[in-house]
Image 1 (tube, protein in one colour):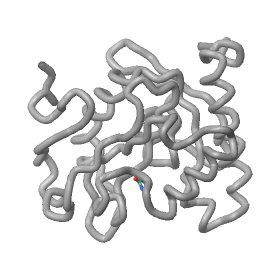
Image 2 (tube, helix red, strand yellow; image 1 turned 135 degrees about the vertical axis):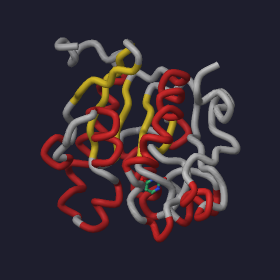
Image 3 (tube, helix red, strand yellow; image 1 turned 120 degrees about the vertical axis):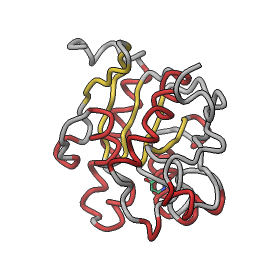
Length: 198
Ligand code: URA
């Protein structure tokens, strides 16, 4: 049993009360969805109002963009696992605090270990900086590969712009789709051919 054992169900989180402000603001905990043996694990920031209502990540406008992007590269939403850094909706959709990200980090690590994907795809700055523990310039690094290490085990991470960024700034669409295409390429070849450095 890990330190997250009380709330980690094997595929998600139940009854967690670590973040008082989020316990207050959430309607429910929003766990990851999709196959627990998916090749691709997408990680966003935190649930918004739609996700909080429906109990599923990326079901609002950002979700429409993600679904469309996946279709463009020949994937359906059901083919991939989708989760967030933080599983409860922050009040007023503010960014999750450093403490909230840290409180939820162990659950994300558990999910990564459970799914053991070929590739983790970070959607936006928050998951990229959380998992890589460095500052990230998402637009210029979109499509790049880095490495995540959890307790001595490592996974490849591909950086992608957040789907919502394409709504605020349509010029980000190319970087978004390019990163998804790259993700399919890396996952499809077992992560071998383009990843000699890892
Ligand atoms: N919906 C999510 O589930 N995560 C985000 O980061 C944005 C919208």
